[in-house]
Length: 79
Image (cartoon, rainbow, N blue to C red):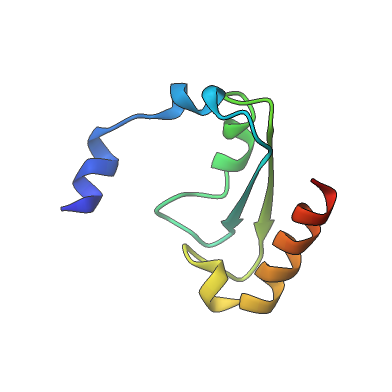
């Protein structure tokens, strides 16, 4: 299944190849991609920023769509 691929494939070293600005949004309650990952991503790429949304889990764009869009619009306006 798709989750097996995620479990067996580590692409972190390839993050540094992404040249455009990146913004990662994590849900504080996410157990699949824990919010603590936000700080770790910064060690793999210099073009990344991140934000943690409270009261959301793995799909903050579904549970809090307005807040998520506000975050992304601000990022896009800044870049």
